[in-house]
Amino acid sequence: MSLFLLTLGFGVVTAAVLSLASVGLSLQFGVTNYVNFAYGSYLAVGMFATYTASQSLHLPFVMAALLGVLSSGMVAVAVDLLVLERFVKRGTSGFFLLIVTFGLALILLNLEQAIWGVGFDRYPVALGNPVRLGPFSVTPAQLDVVGVAIVALSAVHLLLTRTRLGKAMRAMSDNPTLALASGIDTRATTMWTWFITGCLAGLGGVTLALNTVEFQVFTGNTFLFVIFAAVILGGIGKIYGAMLGALIIGLAINLSTLVISSAYAIDVAFAVLVLVLLVRPQGLFTVAGKA
Image 1 (tube, rainbow, N blue to C red):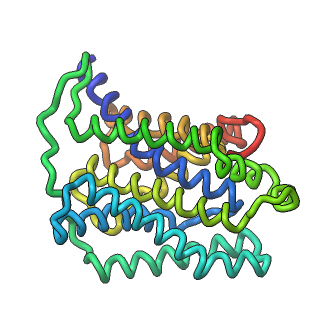
Image 2 (cartoon, rainbow, N blue to C red):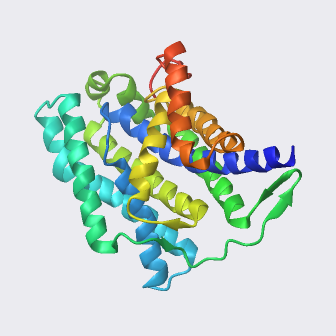
Image 3 (cartoon, rainbow, N blue to C red):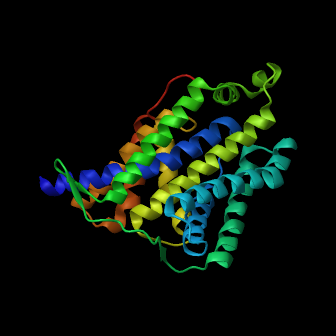
C-alpha cells in the first residue's frame, strides 16, 4: 500500500506538469483551429532559456524561470507572425498547416541543438530531501511544481471567465467569423493566444525539467506525444478537458510502473487514449464550446 501511495503522489506531480502544457496546446487549438506540432520545441525553449539565465547570467532561479517562460511566449508569437499567419491569410487548410508545423518543429529542434547541444543538463537548484505529506512522499521541488500548476491553471480560468481577452478567445473558439463580425480584433486575440500558450509551454518545460532532473533538447518533443494524448483524451480544444486528461494520463503513466517496466510509460498513455476513443471518440469533456 505504501508503494502504491508513493507512486500515486508521483502521478499527481506528473499530472501537474502535463496539465500546464496540455492546457496551452488545447487553448491554442481552440482559438486557431489547427494543431501545432512545433509546440514541443516551445517547451525546450522555456527549459533551456531558464538554464542559460541561471548558469550564464547567474540570475536567481525564479527570475531565470520567468525569463525562460517569457522567452518561450515570444518565440511562439514570432513563429506565428513570421510563418503561420502568412499561411492562414492564404486560406491554407488545416492539413497543410499541420505539415507546416511539423516542418517548423524540425527546424526549431535543429536550431536548439545548434545553440544548446544534445547533451543532458540539469538546473543548479537543490531538489531537497523528500518530505512526508500524510501517506505521500515528495521533494520540495515537486511540491513547488504542483503549486505552480495550481496557480497557473487558476489564472487561466480567471482569464477565460473574467477578462475581456478571455471572452474574445472563447468567442473565436466558438465561431471566428461571428467574432470578427461582432467587432473583436481577431488578429490581436490570436497574437495574445500565441503568447499565453507559449508561456504555458515554457512553464511546462521548466516544471518538466525540474521533475525529470536531467533534460536535453529532445525532451520537449518526446513529451509532446504525451501532451497530445492528454488533450485528445479530454476533448481537443476543451481547456477543462485537457486538465482532466492530464490528470488521468499522469496517474496512468506512474501507476502502470507498479506492474510493468517504466520504459513502457508512454505506451501506457497511448493505450489509455485508444481505449477511451474506442468508447468515446469525442473525448471525455463534452460541454458546449471548445474553450
